[in-house]
Each structure stands twice: as structure tokens, then as C-alpha cells.
Image (cartoon, rainbow, N blue to C red):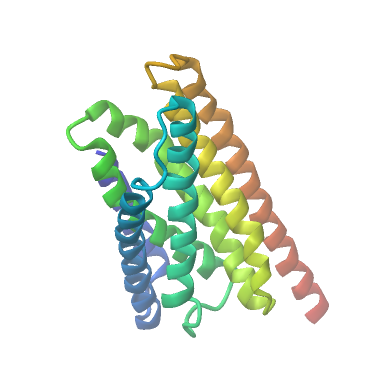
Amino acid sequence: MAVVSSIIFIKYFYNKYFKDKGKKRLFSYSFIAGFLSIITTIVLIMLFSLILITENQFLAIIIKAFIYTAIIPEILKLVYFYIILYKNNNFKNITDGIILSIILSLSFLCLENLLYSAGDIGTAIIRMITALPGHLLWSGILGYFIALSKIKVNKLKVVYGIIPAVIYHGLYNFLLFTGSNKIINNAYLKYLVIPLLIISFLHFIYLIKKEDLSIAKIRRIKI
């Protein structure tokens, strides 16, 4: 179910934004980048799990929530975006950066949803309701600053995207993991993902409105 919802969004963005040949190639590249990101993430998690070993349940959740399922995947998404998409001539503006980052993330999410929710309808429904919009928002924020770093010719701009993406993603995982952990036994924590998603949404909308104001200002100057 969660996988189907991801595919529906991918199809929507494809039909709306990827109409000419150059853009369609970018779509394929971003999808491949997402697939490579999660494959590499799985490999790195397997390697790190041999090193980061602890019997402390709370510390184990922190490692899983922030390192395994936030820092590693978000950084790898960024790395593959730079390797495969960043220098492409069809990647020209803020909208391109946001949409390409979202497609990359949705590609990543398709396989991730299979791993998390195979055979578990309850988990699939929760991830469809919360993880899908979360990934759309966090990847949109990251994509905005990736595009800004290219337009402004300042790669340090991407720091303003990767940090919130990691924090939002890590907190989301932490709240779900602690809320469902039988030892910690605090089921109410998982409901805090709702205000976290609202904050993520407001952050993303702020960036979009900021970009609209910048475009309007440029148009007034030209007139």
C-alpha cells in the first residue's frame, strides 16, 4: 500500500513536470540515483552494525534513528544527486532541484517501504500516512538548497538543506522507534510525529514563498 502511494506520486510528478526529452532523462537519472542511494544505505548499515554494537536500548534507538535511517540515507541522497544530476544542463532552477530531489526520495522510499512493511499492513498504513509526506517535505527542503547552491555558485548553501533534512528525519524515526519499543514503553511519543510533520510543512512552505518573492522582485527590476 505504501509502495503504491509512492508510485502514484512518482507518476503525478512525471506527468506534470517531465514533458520534454531532456527532462525525461533527468527523471530517469533521479530515479536511478534514488535506487542506488538505498542500495548503498543498506550496505553501509550492514557494515556499521558490525561496529556500533550496544546493549543499551535507548542508545540503540538513537543510533538506528539518527545514524542508520537519517544521516546515512540523507547524505547518500545528496551524494548521488551531485554525482548524477547536479551538472546536468537540464537542471536549471529551484523547481527542478525540488522536483528532482523528491523523485530521488520517492525512488528510495519505494524499496524502503518494502523493507519496513513487507507483510505488515498496519506498518504500511502508518508509513503511507506519515513517512510519505515526511520524505516529500524533507527532500523538497534539501532540493531547494541544492538548486540554490548551483544558482548562487556556492555549494555551502546545501548545508542549510542537509541539516534540517537529517534532523527532521532523525526525530521522526526516533519518535516512532521509542513509541513502539516494548522496553521504553511510551506509546504517546509516536503521536508527536504529527506536529513534527506540520513544522516540516511550514518550513517547506516558507522556502517556496521566499522563492516566489525573489522571482517577483526580479520581474519588477526587469520591468
